[in-house]
Image (cartoon, rainbow, N blue to C red; front, side, top):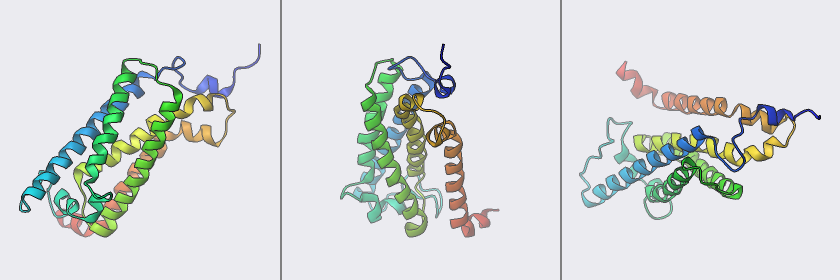
Length: 208
């Protein structure tokens, strides 16, 4: 009997066509949380449009202030508020999570397309991070929730999309990245936190 490939032995593989329960639940939870954050941001934006003196619920201090971000051009890149895109995108993710939790088989091409869509969202998130830190000079708490959810979804959905291909490969760079994906994600979160700390240190230091 031939030896089983290393990737087959080590990868945590559910039954063919099924998604592991933790991954399915995280897609559902992250999708629902992102949808809630996007809907809240949309509500706050409407209130600002109706009443320019309205103070959003996420205005906590000069740095953590949704209002300062919402009134900038970067908050409406496509000509309408960015959260509207989030509502559509996270609705798709939430429905996908419901189906995955219910153990409904979704074709691999669907997971691949969803992973590509989330990757595009992650690229957009990084642009928004740069704009928030170095152009706008303020942070939107609800937006930061969306940043974190998008990156975690990229890891989870990317894992679901890539797993079948990795199972057929010998150990290599792709497999190493797969196995260290959560460590890489933690490093990403740490790097963003450090960038925020350094960028606004003049303000943070006054709170010490």
